[in-house]
Length: 533
Image (tube, rainbow, N blue to C red; front, side, top):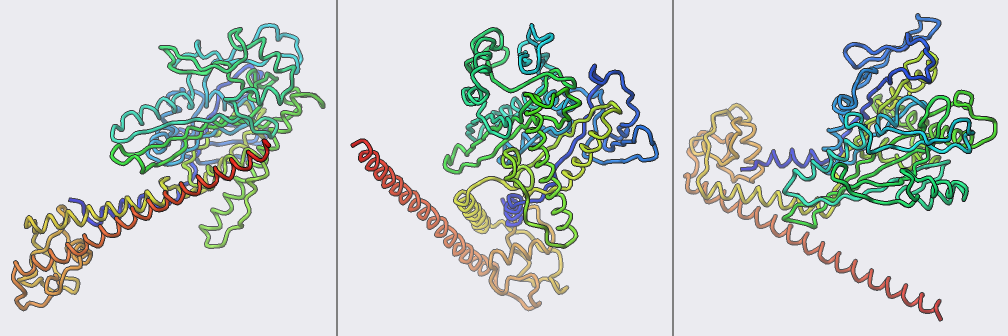
C-alpha cells in the first residue's frame, strides 16, 4: 500500500533540483605534432581527481585543480565512457531529463577522438597542396575498430538499449545535426545548405570526391554490422600543423525522445540528449594560417564563438558563487552573442544535466593553452543547473490527481478490510495513547509514532481517535471504524471530482485549440486565394 509520504517524496523528486555541471579532464597521448617535446608540466594525481600544472621554467608556480575525474593518456575509450559518467546522463535522458555532453579544449587536444573516435583517412593527392586546394580528411566508419569508438556512438547505442528495455512505455526518437561554420548554423542532414554557402567550387569538389568515390548526395544505408548509418555526411574538416583531421566547425547532434506509458499515450514526457563536438581554440601562427586565407577566416570565427562561450561560463560561475554567498547575482548572460551559446543555453545554466570533457595536450609547449582550459573547466564546475523532469502542466496535474486518488482508495480498502496496526509510542506531548485510540490504519512499514501522527492528520481522523487523547475511555472500535470510513470516502469523492474537472478542462482546451486551428487554416486559405487571383 502506498503511503502519503511516498507520494510526497515522488512529487518532490520531480521538482527542479540544483545539479552542478560535471567536469572530467582527459589528457591525450603524445603525437607527432608534439615534435618530441618534454612533458613535465602536466601531471595527474593518482586518485584520479586532481590535475597539477607547473610553469615549464618555474616549477614553484604550480597550480592544482580538482574535478569529478581526471584521466591520463593511458585511458581507453571504454574506460573513458564508464568513468566520466556518460551512462548516467544517457539513462536520465531516457527517463525524461535533458542531458548534454560536450568536449572543450585547444585544437589537436583530442576532442573529436573523444566524442567520435572514428578513424580518419587522408585523401590521395594532398601532398604539397595548399590548405585551400587540399581535400578534407574523411571518416572511415567501416575500418574503425570497435574499441576505438567514442562517446557519441556508444551513447546512441546505450540510449536505444535503455528505451527498448522499458516495455511499459512507447518511445519515439528524432534527431537533428547542426553545424556552426563561420558563425552560421547549417543543417548537416540537408547538405545543400552548407555546400551552397561554401561556394560552387567546394560543391563540385564534394560531388566528384564523395567518401568512397561515390556521389556527394546524402544517403541513409543499412548493413548487418552497422545497422542504419549515413553516407556522405558533409562535416567541414581540414588539416594543419597541429591536427591532421581538424574540425573547422562546431557540431551538435541532438536526439529528441518522446515517451509515454502504454496505458496512457497522451501523457508524453519529452527530453533531449545533446552531443557536442566543439572546434578547438587556436592561434594562427601555430596552425600555419597565413594573414589571408581560408584557415585564418575559419580560425577567427572559431575563436569568436569560443570567446563568447568562455564569457557565458564566467558569468554563470560568478552568479553561482554570488548565490551561495547570499547576494543577488547579475542578470545578464551573453547567450545571444554567438550561435553556439544560443544553442547551448539550456545546457549551461538551464535545466539540463551537463558533462564537460576538458581535453589537454601533454606537451609543455601548450602550457598556456592547458592553463586556460583548466581555468574555464574549473569555472564550469561551479555552474548549477535546475534539473527537472520534462512534462507539461496538463500531464503533471493529471498524474498528481491520479496518484492522490489511488492513495485514498488504498486507504479506504485498508479500513474496509480491517488493516490495523498498534501504536506503541507516546503522543506528541508525552501522553500515553488512550485505550480506545490504540489502533489506527496506516501504511505498512511505518512503525514510528511520528509517522502515525502524520498519516492520521492526512486522513482527517475524527476527534477521539488521536494518539494524544486523554486516558478516558473513547468510542468503540466499530464507531471509530465507521467515522474513519465516512471521512475517507469523503476525501476520495473530492479527489475524484477534482480529477474529473481537470480532465473536462483539458478536453475543453483541446476543442478550443482545434477550433482556432480550423479558423487559422481558413484565413490562410482565403489569403492564398486572393493572391492567386
